[in-house]
Length: 396
Ligand SMILES: *[C@@H]1O[C@H](CO)[C@@H](O)[C@H](O)[C@H]1NC(C)=O
Ligand SMILES: *[C@@H]1O[C@H](CO)[C@@H](O)[C@H](O)[C@H]1NC(C)=O
Ligand SMILES: *[C@@H]1O[C@H](CO)[C@@H](O)[C@H](O)[C@H]1NC(C)=O
Ligand SMILES: *[C@@H]1O[C@H](CO)[C@@H](O)[C@H](O)[C@H]1NC(C)=O
Ligand SMILES: *[C@@H]1O[C@H](CO)[C@@H](O)[C@H](O)[C@H]1NC(C)=O
Image (cartoon, rainbow, N blue to C red; front, side, top):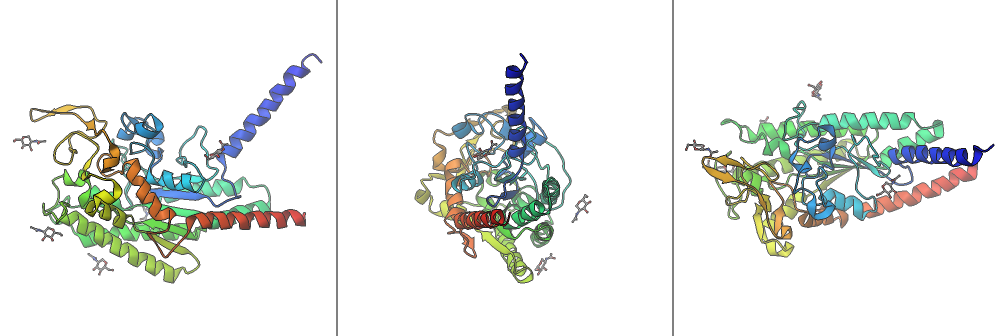
């Protein structure tokens, strides 16, 4: 008897803990989820939980301006994708592999730094490149299968399956296929390389379509030739355009983007039940290079964090790397005073303030083709779901 008052709160707290555990880990069918795939521009810590202490994004000064500490994101703060999910009321999406306190209520981020769209094997080296797009798709399928399997009863399974079709699938893929492998050989074939990348993207999209995905938002590749990481590199033929960007890398990005637009056109014809939306991030970035003052930018071709040189970027010592002597010169990274005067934080990843402009391209729909209102999509499905909830409750 005397135990009762002690035991009861204990049992209640157990019940609370287990409810908190399972709710925190499961997605909710009350609103569409967002599932994200891609690489370092939107990685929310996938690589850092999969292979701890191997990526620069886990070290000072990454994340400092917003999180006050590194959180596995390649920015001084949030990524543009974080800004999108925050704006629609979803907060920050956790990486798929986050094993402790992962919160998947609003969706899952599968993006993995350094990854390609091309089917490459995991290397696990310092630069990342852990989970290429098709592996991310497999991870999604695992997630979906186990989510469906834990639903109690036919109705619940059906509702969850519908949920996967009402959800939004966002892609930031393809840029590493070129920034890492572009012009690495003398006979590098841009057309063949683009065709390979696009072919794997198609395989990934079709695989997701097959398991129910119906809303695809696909980002194109930013003008790689304007990125400090490419400008500081010596690959390519060394020709620059009028804005000081590398012409060959920009042509490569253009070729990819044209083929991507064609791919989405083909997919619209082949799978008219789905929405195939292009997010033209390239135009936003390019416009900022050409008209920096419209974006409050002063140094469009330089990185905020880097070890000097004309682009404040050196291939030998990256942001967060240990300093070292290179041919008698001591190379050590520094950070700029005001990141908002830059597009890029380190090599190619946007500073948080520029991420705002990229996010606006999606949130306002200004850079989506065909037009798509993400806020409305989230809202209208929310409303539809809650009225069908009511109908369902009415039946009972
Ligand atoms: C999950 O994240 C959302 C958005 O940040 C938040 O509103 C919600 O309370 C979180 N859920 C749990 C169980 O922590
Ligand atoms: C991707 O690579 C893996 C491992 O090499 C292989 O098993 C798989 O069949 C490949 N998938 C495609 C679509 O090429
Ligand atoms: C790439 O695909 C395009 C369009 O389908 C085709 O015209 C071109 O010949 C292909 N390039 C290579 C190298 O196969
Ligand atoms: C370098 O590549 C660019 C873009 O593909 C091309 O326009 C230019 O003619 C090339 N320059 C040289 C010297 O080969
Ligand atoms: C260092 O100097 C040597 C000889 O001048 C040169 O070949 C090499 O490319 C230089 N290395 C770097 C990293 O600049």
